[in-house]
Length: 341
View 1 (cartoon, rainbow, N blue to C red):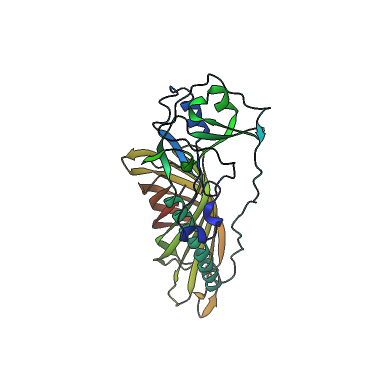
View 2: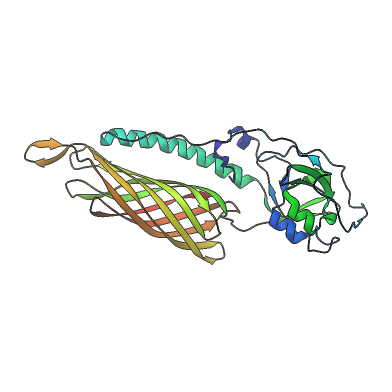
């Protein structure tokens, strides 16, 4: 998901996450450089890639390979130019939802089908790839690509602080040496996030009647830290009003999430946000026998409590108990869904 895996083809799901290359985060590389060379392969943080790196193959080491310590390695000008990586960014297109309540509901359902397909794709890919710790031989080849674009490959035991600082990307392959997958890492929210939640919400008609109906929220955003996230949020809700016509509510908000509480696999926190709200309602009888639409636009304030259960390092089951203030009215919702990080 870190590169928004929701745009990848469904064929990746059918074959599982079979990519045979892993990245060592730069922070982990710096930590390993401070560990004794003969011991640094015992517990290495690795993240399976979505698309395999096209770095050249390196000779395989075995369990009997002798550990050779080299005090310093040269990186930079003498290294080879890294292979080029093609590809382009992707995104989710959108369309303006407007018009009568029934039209808004129909457009929202079409959007939610696309959002659900993206969620299934993202959760399947992120849930299948390994993100955790592995045991490697100290002489396991590490492919380093520098910030200047140069490339070199060195044994894990040879990496020093200078090499760790020079490297922008570090890639390892299980096929190039002994490899034992250990435990997965705990839930990590840092980076891009995508979420989709469904449930029920109270929706108020233009004539003042309040009743429950289906409610959905789709979110996309970024967590700069483990506990703090900034997201864009789209809310859809609808129900029939007292005249058998459609009441459709949509909100577009910017949202701040804070999840400071953790008890094992349970996480808890709060969210709050602001933006715009639109109500499209068909056939509201307000004056005598006169029937007029109950359309209205205005500002929206949202907030509430969040709860999460770890599924794995990148996927969490999320519950939201929320309150919204829009059209001069107060509404509530209870939603459950999946967050992918």
